Image (cartoon, rainbow, N blue to C red):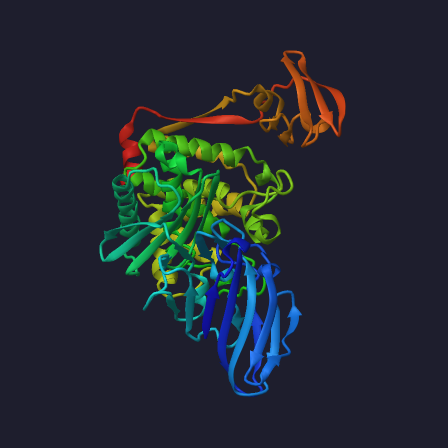
Length: 547
């Protein structure tokens, strides 16, 4: 099969696509466009961006019928070469989309490449028609300029591509593997320092997994002039969109860059190769429900940040600041009372990437990371660690290509646990169940020389009344145990408020009407900040870092 891609009018953001393939006489050809992509377990319906699909055979136009929203089919009347032409509107500039503009072509092939049912293993050649002075960044082999090769459609859709005149490129080496950084946008950071830090966290991750079965890996990074944060994992690369670009000259910006890149590199093992059975292999035509979001993203979120501590990028205080933020984000949401992380993972296809119904669910990222932190601390009681669990999964499932289940993950943890019954209880209460995780974490932290306290937020509306607002005063969250929950609504605009021992008096605007609201006093504190500090035995935390 041969794809030919061109952008005759780049400002239109239209990508013209031609697919050539051979057919046998009377062959029934199914043309399936993906409905979703790896790393994002929700229906995306990429067919909505297609325009004017046509098929021609040796004798002329072919009647190609649309059977579903993203499936076409035809019967080949003759043997020979068949050509499909269509256009794709490439105007989504995030880590999972595609983008065409006068100065760049950025393609996620999962958005626009067809799966020919029964022919998924055929090799594919990509002819990319872009200006000669463009650089092309992609994990696929490039035997000559403008030509790329994929072993099959799975490799193609897992290999995003940048093509632009201005691409910054650097690389570093760890063991026998070369790691490439491709950056589009304005670079304001120090390359030598960035490469040093990347090399350090890469080395630590490889050391703990034991090997890195790839000769090359590519970080494809868009630095954007506006706020943005998104990353997507692939077999031999990752795409990251990050902004604003000027922030990269600061420690805050560097923390964001290092954090997302460490996270996505960890996905090289976890998800790209250590993959849940439900998505092994991928079927992009329909939903693939999975319970393993805790492992896929909870483990990766926790471990990605931990390797920045282990590699020396984060100081102890910087890492504890990150953990404080994780606690705040995880526990301001009361969804753990209503839905387990298993059910929240299963429901990713419904609302996993949207705010959704308040306090309905938990995040497989934040709540998942807190659960994995607890598992790591429980294992540490026996001198074992989370990275050892993941190495077991790597050897049993990642290297073999065999999909794992939640129970396989559970068994790996139990095999390293000093008290399997206690760990089994943890799973029943906190993974399958809806118990409050905070008291357990608080009790475990002293073992690594830490203690945690809840402190009032600077905005007393949040702690005392249970109301969170945006910067315009509109309510964005109400604590379900507060009196405010009984009288106010999300999207109410707070005009004035006064909080005293006798209660709170507020004036709010709802649908252009003003209301005076009285909220009685309460002894309960609602939204809180978390403060983690060392207890004075730093050797315990050093053991946590090094073991």
